Amino acid sequence: HVQLVESGGASVQAGGSLRLSCAASGYTHKSYCMGWFRQAPGKEREGVAAISVDGSTAYADSVKGRFTVSRDNAKNNLYLIMNNLKPDDTAMYYCAADIAHFSSPAAEWPECPFKDYIKGRTPEYWGQGTQVTVS
Image 1: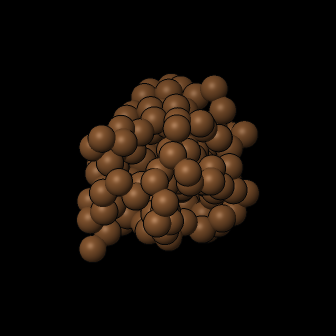
Image 2: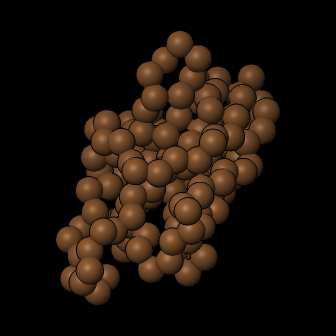
């Protein structure tokens, strides 16, 4: 079964940096859109960063210029480098992904709607989350 496991969350001071990782397993050669979401207490979940199969990225305005999302398709891993962290970045961070349900080769897949993650699209699979606290 599909499993996403996040790691790297920690408590840091404002201005600090963190690197989150997400290890995906349970599927191979079908990785599609992937992204990071966060939810702070009392706030709605928001899409923070998203990435397509070919590495195209999208970010929430609140993190542009500070966060960088990347992926290693060979390992099915997803990463989020967070710089210049602010107290408002405090939240539970979740890795999420969609799997391509196409029978055609990957080269023939339509572009995954990764930008929609920032607009509220809910991916198919989710990790358990890793806590980031900035003080």
